[in-house]
Amino acid sequence: MEKLQRSIVYFLIFATMFVLGGVQNTKGLILEKVQNDISLDVSQVGIMVSIFQIGFLLASLIAGIFADRKGIKIVMSIGTVMMIGGLIGTSAAFTAAFFLGFYLIVGLGIGSMTVSVATLIPTFFKERAGVVFNLANALFGVGMIVTPLLLNFIFSHNVSWRFFYIGTAVVIAVILLALLTFKPAKQAASQGQDNVTVSSILKLFQDRQILFVILFILFYVAVEAGFLNFFPIFYTALDIAGMDAAQKAATAGYIIASFAFLFTIGRFVGGFIIYKLGERRTLVVFSLFALVSLIVGRIFMTDFSYLMMLFGLALSVLFPTAQGIASKLTRQAGSLQGLIYVASGLGGAVIGILIGQVSQIFGISNGFNLLIVLALVIVVLALLIRTPKQSVG
Image (cartoon, rainbow, N blue to C red; front, side, top):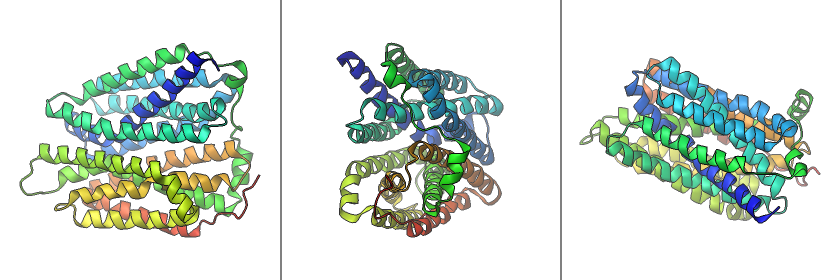
């Protein structure tokens, strides 16, 4: 690959991951403002979260196969255009239905861009794919850290969330311009992952260990998405002495940023942790850590709210560790990747509706407490997962 094209690929990967990390980690902060701006109740917020995840899920089902047939550049171009249109549309929305429709488009765009980056890395960096994946995840984490702080700064100056989404659309437009100058070699452009077919999925489900890993990822994403989307709403609803609504919203933003910071640190040192503990022990230990940190953070929420950021450190290594275990269980890497994306989308979609409806009926505190139950399920699944003595090869 010539030097200019390699530089463009690096920019596409790292800039995209930074933006995706920022958008993913500010959904809860944005939705808290949207809730007041267009008069939504908490059940409607839950539907918004689920619609976003459904968009991500739909993109996950089709983007990988479409990339195999039409090329990565076309799929990523479609994803960026959908992101730009969706963000501009949501920024102009003044009704729930209008916002909902464009939020679905944002989810579709993020799903397409995520699958594109996941395909881009092993296609163009075969020998160094692991290194580039780690760097990409680090940039995703930096986006998770920086963007909530930027959002709090914007809100502190009474700037609407709408301008933040417009600004994000402009950044993605720059990514699109870089993408249009990208000229992949024909062989690289056409090389894709295994097609995700119904038969391959059914065969994978026959393996109990793969089923446990897929369920683990589903519940993991449900817990992570539930926390990031509903924690700001939950925290601002608390009665905390000496804090008004604006102060609580700002504190929630800083806690989310701290969560993301420790989450990123955990991703950086995850390889060392796995080397010391082994994959299965890492999965069990950090699943227990996640459950305990969530319970302790919930108990001491009003007095020591920043304890909740430890939850980010606990979650950081679970997803990549589960992926690592899964990769040793089958030769069907493409089908498995499709399942992982589908599980991620389902986990995020279901939790939005579940917490939203429970919160509407029983209050946001009880809705948020559902995360503890789901974290307990993660621990049980971690105990059921076994790592094979030898990779399937």
